[in-house]
Image 1 (cartoon, rainbow, N blue to C red):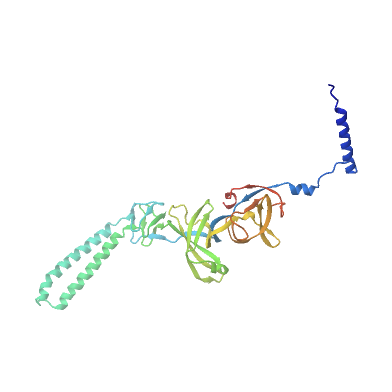
Image 2 (image 1 turned 90 degrees about the vertical axis):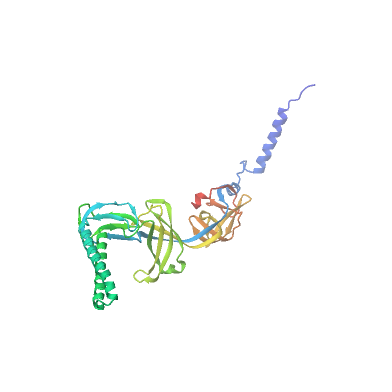
Length: 361
């Protein structure tokens, strides 16, 4: 059987097809699809996030210098030469602890002399008790003995107290922030020997505009940051709010107490305080990056079936890269957080989930 050559027939068929195509185009040039149609059909890569439930706080920020509410000088109560130093700057001490000793020999001898006079008066008084009871001495004489005994006892107590003052003692518990005396130095009465500062609890006075007064109450929580440790937040509490307004600048004073048990902060540091004055629990929250301000309303793009839908939302508290959604979103909606540019209602998207920590800190 002889095989037919199919090439001429195939070539003829292709020629007819080409002619038909040219005839259909009219000009002999292949048509190019519409650019807008291509753009509309091409998915835009975006990153999305799912709303989550969290507690969120309305906050107010203020700056102030950090200080200690317990800062006291320790002065010499009697004059004398410093014979012994028992603490140094930075040492933690307790109230009543001896910090230094003065030469108290003269005061000790004065105390011993006063004690001898007191003992003699006490024996004299005891001998006359029986005589007074039997009426052998007058009441006036006996009362004189009583007054003398009381006077000598007071003199002895004073001498003993002065002798004890030769030991310079801490007036409060805290840290020795400065030592102002040296061994061998002669001190005068009232001279400052040490300064003690309590640093386990620090304090700051925040000046708040009077327009914000209604937002704050004693007991509000706060955090504080300092420049030397920018990655750390320290706990604080608003403990007092002044009832009067400073007429010079129109502010009121809120007193914040800072927990410094670990000793990381020091008086004199400058802190930035964030006060949480309102708390919403179990709020629906999304990253603030998802929000768009369009046509005087706040909107987000929600991904549904690989397309975006523009959704108007009502927002509440905003804090640390997060915003509360009061209305307009469901818990399982996927909102666009990266790639808004160029999107419009119905745009095709290629969505990938993202890590919320990138946006919420």
